[in-house]
Image (cartoon, rainbow, N blue to C red; front, side, top):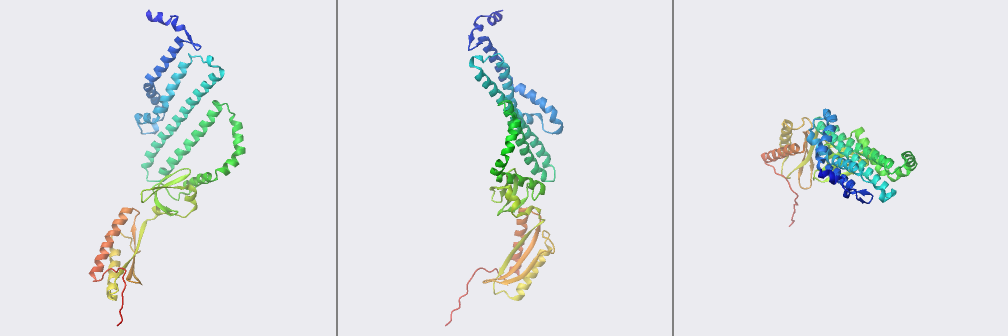
Length: 363
């Protein structure tokens, strides 16, 4: 009874800036409900959205909620703010400010919708990356981030045009015609960006490399980490991250080290000049025999030859191939063979040369 008396009291009918005190209290009550039950409403809406897409994924509801939580929270608050504001009149501010507040609200609301779709794109990227990791092909690991970025650009472009049409009342047809006329100037101004964009499409169509390949391009060697619209990121062996424009990736010579089936090892062993011919022949023979019988070298491609007379050494050229492309395995095999070569040289009573000078004194 007292509550009814309070709600019907003259105090609540007191007018402030064109609205009664009762209207302000209703507005505060509705907005407060939005803040209090935002989390519950957000989870309920998330569950509804998730029910439409869960069949194509193996992600759980909680992970999906974490991805889309923030934009949905803001959308719910804006909806409660809208329903609460229907009890408030802005006529006292004038038509200009009333329209401005309405357009500002619509602008924020649509931006939250764009934000939601961008987060939804991140969700599908996460799902597709999980599936890509289970396949043996590296192409899908490269394509998923690229397609995700492309989809985000499309969402942003469509969102901007929608905002311009609905919020700012801009004729999209006329705008598109204007962009067509000015397209040449824009294309010329962004020539480098367009070349890099076309370079990214060439990379996907021609497939000179995929994510995870080891390449050498423009004096930079490392592992491909990401292929984007404008550039490709390479993680060097020094663990630094080098960003190269896609135009350069398709214009210059590119050596895809990840495509080869073996690594070549080539070096010289310098023996001292007091090593005789018989010793050299035996050393060459034993090294060649060892490489041919080694379980972790490519057969019939090794070369061991007495190659040259250097200024302070007799050089034996050694060439062999290590199968596979794993860097650590390559170093382990190379180290093992180096130790054996040292043993062979010592076995035949020779030694390794070092830069030296012989001085003859004439009496």
